[in-house]
Image (cartoon, rainbow, N blue to C red; front, side):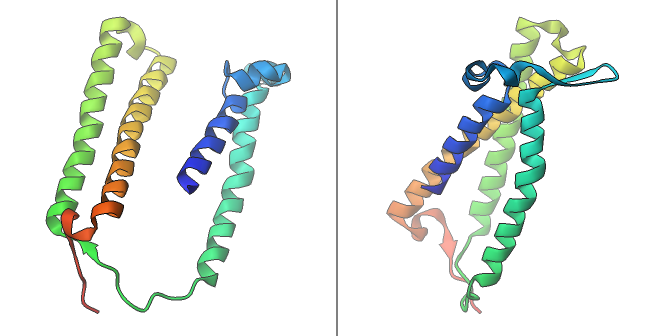
Length: 163
């Protein structure tokens, strides 16, 4: 439930802090230039994005520390995944990142060969790579979580760890 709530609120906030999204069209002042300093211009949506990071990231860290301090210590060591499962997971994550990078590279070279000659083009390609590989990993992690919840630890290679 927290993943759905967090993802939903993140996407909602992004609609107001990213240029061209429905939130910035709904509130036109966010599309106007708020900062114009020595040739650098920043729209309101970008300023809001960076301010929210500066304000809320430290606040979330403080809340996390407070929450961790109030937790009772765990008396037993939880089960861990076998070496085989850890290795397969690492290989899978690396394969997703490499495959996605190759796909984005090929798509970019075929559609716009000059996209690697500018900083904005490199940023766009990096954004596509991170977004696509992150989406694939998020979906498969969710599928693994559902599998784990229904079929238990034995089917995914967990072993108990002695104290």
